[in-house]
Length: 415
Image 1 (cartoon, rainbow, N blue to C red):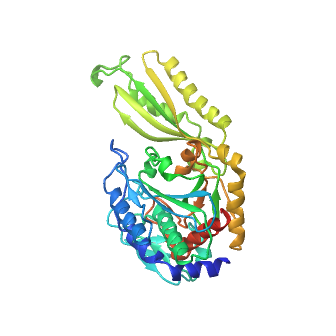
Image 2 (tube, helix red, strand yellow):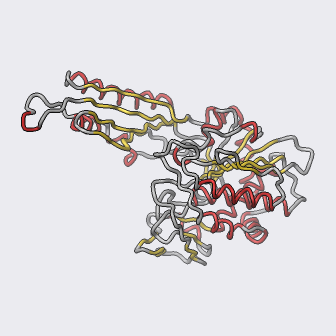
């Protein structure tokens, strides 16, 4: 089935529009300051809703565990023994408020700027994807919150995909395994996932951007904490005595090369990004993230950080400098390339829709990166949204439907 027909069929045969609008109004923002799991109980509110919906669709094993993970399965309707997982996250990013989301519907988009409320506009100059959405129905927030298409568009696509398969028993498919996760946005999305309960041979996260985007490469990600311990004195009598940790931490940040900053890199270029600084004259810690597609580039990043710290430590003997660098996640391609049949499935499914895949590396990560190294090869699929983590986030119903239609094609091929 080709793209336009498939999109129309999904929209007509499923409750995609209604469920997406309901999902985004559930407050599921994760909390990076929390020491619980999930980080916020409100994330379970959507989980409870999804379990009920899955049960109503006939998936008798739908459940949410104590950690907030939702599991369910749709048995194969043929002799296939394959088990294929489809995964999306329920939480929204803490970068922008997800409380009291009021979705705004803009029907039959005809080009130009979109005024979404609160004096906020979405401009085709900064969202060039809009040119491909003429005639479609665009959904935005009201300009006071994010929308939550990341990743509730992915959740809605998977749910609509399941509904469509159930309504079309003539479509043969393997065993479908579903998992919805909490806390992905704060890097903990698979900390307590039960892979035995998922029970899949391979899977897909539905957490990408604009249609046709498929990802089987992502950043290697490390975090760095550089702590400066100084010496404090009364400022009126501090000459030749005070060692201000704040000042030296600031100097350290200035030593990071501008050409390796996020704002000056794209494509496969690596970066070093200070994301926060906390402390006082006595002790200040700089929090950083290091990103690269190759471990060779990561070694360079690490060396830049450690060399700058060593230089300052040697320049000011009274200054203590401690560096801690830790792995967050690795490039899934190291696993996916050993399972090339999954890439073949993704490409063939796109071909079946009459589309050209946009194969691009993720300048970030998904749950699939960690899952791949946990034994579940798991590339990433588009969910349809744009401007994630922003009050200018938007998606079209048609793009979510296209994601669901793509999942149908994957299921057909993966038997």
